[in-house]
Length: 283
Image (cartoon, rainbow, N blue to C red; front, top):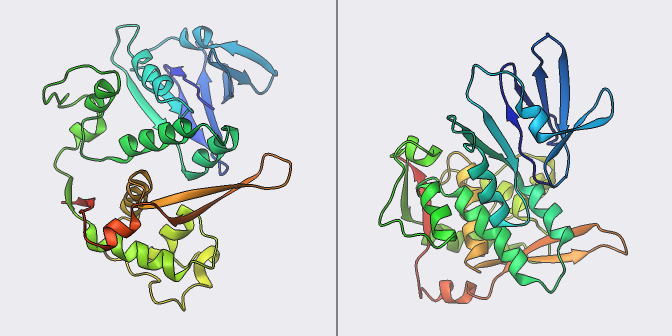
């Protein structure tokens, strides 16, 4: 699930419709090779045309006139993901670290977990909260994870959040959280994933939620979260805060699962106005 590639001169990244990442590398003699990331540790890539594996070091030797780029998929371990960030600059050259993930990646990880290992679920959600936070310095978040003192440290230009500082702000999202709870209660007889709930609250015309337009809360947050990715961030904050919870059901004897959104243990505390909820807004 996790991989790292140092792509030098002529490197190009493509993501197909299923979220599979392909990297095309032009060798010094002009040959074009296409690599697909595979689940391997140590990190490796698969040469599709000739069906043999090339080690990370071999990929890293492609001649360069450009900054190396690291592409990493989310892993079941925060520690591994954060360590991958450190690999980007280990050769002393300027580097960029980009992590690509989507909601289905989270469900793939859930399939691999033992039902009793609650810490694994928490680790994934904590990682998502860090990645979905458009305000906090990402380096500060990683330092906190490893117990390093940062004393209000911000890297200023070393992460995407600091580089685009001022584009987002934290505001009160309590009333919006109550709308989310109202929607979950209203749809309590329907199995919804987090992504379904996001589309429902945004008033999407996608087929998976179009049959729910008759419900009162359909589209109730469509104008409150623009772009809709901010609504996804908000829902993940509610999950990690146990306002909402993801109930995981295994299907049959195979590895298939369904992940259903329900009220969390702190939902009633929020309804009783015992605390406030933050949200992110574009400035």
